[in-house]
Amino acid sequence: MDFLFEKVRSGMVAIVGPPNAGKSTLMNHLLGQKISIVSSKPQTTRNRILGVVNGDDYQIVLLDTPGLHKARQPLNVEMVRIAMDSLSDVDAVLYLIDVSLPLPPKQEQEKSQEMLEQMKTVQAPVILILNKVDLLEKEKLLPMMKRYFELYPFHAVLPISALNGEGTESVLEELLGLMPMGPRYFPEDIPTDSSERFLVAEIVREKVFIQTGQEIPYSCAVTIESFKDDSLKKMTTIHASIVLERASQKGIVIGKGGSKLKSIGTAARIDIEKLIGQKVLLKLWVKVRKNWSKDNRFLKELGF
Image (cartoon, rainbow, N blue to C red; front, side, top):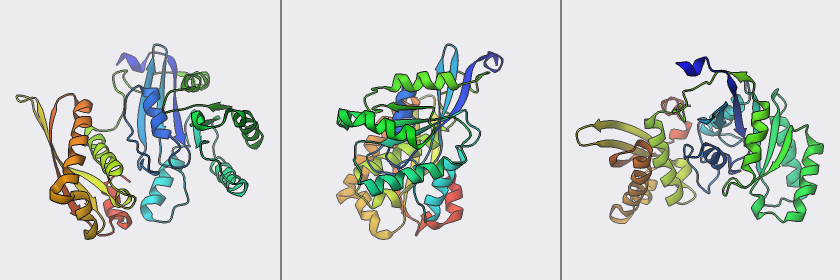
């Protein structure tokens, strides 16, 4: 328990921003390993994911959050609540935006106003992260940074590419300057507080996001039915259910002759084996729970 008494630079940092800005990609890069699932589709992250970045004289606890957006459905409302709640009691905030897609002036102004509304209650220093600058015309960068500095008293405005790591060293440097002295929150060999069951469910859900069309991912949840380790065989057997909202979606996920479900399972198994460090037997089922995203009881079962 020596980590409780060692004094280092240690603090909590919330990573927030609109959907698909690259929040999970940035956290995974800073961690040096994959904890948060990622896809090209917005609103991939649904829960708050905690990741721990350790150094010889520091520990930064990152909180990856769902994308901030105008929410109406119960699931989306809970996702936004989780993100906004993460802004309290942190030592710093990383606010990410995707600068690769230019917006019409009116829409850009609306997005800026949304950001200002979201930052109203924030007491901690906010670092604005301009992500995906590798896809931005270079001459547009400095005027953009100047505009954001005039919009809000950001502690810093940093251009990065979370995908290839460009500029991420400066993110870590700025955060270290904001961290107070204190004990480590976690032992140095613990990269997250998420359970293996939760991370496995997230991996399966990621593969559904990647391998299915626009409708299915947002109608899909994953539950772990059983998780058994066999130390003699050095194998973990996992039974998981992909839960859909409508019966008509079932055939899409299963595919012809079960081909799609097999592909999802194979991709998930490879990542799960990397996560837990041994062979995995993964068995997937597809179930229908009508309108589960509006069912508050089921949402609580999923951890919302």
